[in-house]
Amino acid sequence: MPQDQMRRARTNLASTSEVSTTQGEDEPHRVKRSISQPSPFNNSAHIKELFGDIISSTLKLCQYQGQLNVCPRGRPGLPGRAGPKGDKGTKGPRGIIGATGRSGKPGKMGPSGVRGEKGIKGDIGAPGLPGIPGTKGEPGESLSPPKVTISAPKLIVNETKTASLLCSASGNPAVQISWSKTKGSLPRNRTKVASNGLMQITNVGLEDAGEYKCDARSILGKDEKTASLVVQTQPQVSLSSGPTYVEVGKNITLPKCHVISFPPAVIK
Image (tube, rainbow, N blue to C red; front, side, top):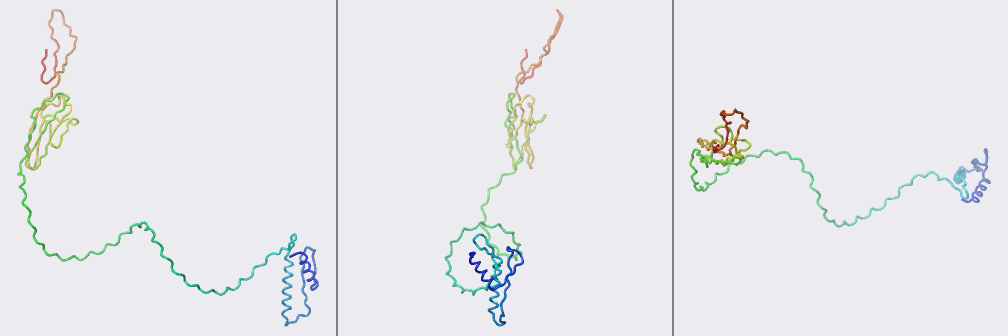
């Protein structure tokens, strides 16, 4: 509100009201309303007094800031009553059904259900017709005790070579074959025995020479055969190198010459 309008409002109020100031000019003014002989049955006097109080309260709260009159906002009034409810609209048409979405991943398998009760045993069926008899089978092999055969009863092998002896055994039921040395034992690291009865000794030496036995056994009995292994070696000479002392004109016997070989070597 401009300043000239505010001044006019104050002048008009001063002509119809009495103002009493108890403090300085900057203090708010208290306006006393006086109505001469209001009629107890006249409501306009009360309405006029109410509007006067409103204007007086407004003048007390308003303050000038520069060229504008700024008044603080009053408290909000009570909410009004709700308006009448509008008519319910008509239901629209149903939309088009969309395309089917992709199938989701299968869920986890649930726990196993409770096992049901055992059912009632059914009646025994009628006996079936006898089947067609099968063809007569061929007669089986006759039973026989083990019988052993060795490929070479005597085997000659040079030193450091491999000696091979084959033991064959027949019989029904099947027989089990094993090899052993008659005097001594088989060299563990250099002996191989196959399931078909073949025995091999690698890197043979003079200590491997001797007789070897093949043993075949079954529930009907056993049988065995022996084979000799001869190992040929180069002559190995051992002789004391001396020296041997003797007086002049005396006899002397030279040291003995020891030779190991097979077959025996000729010593000169």
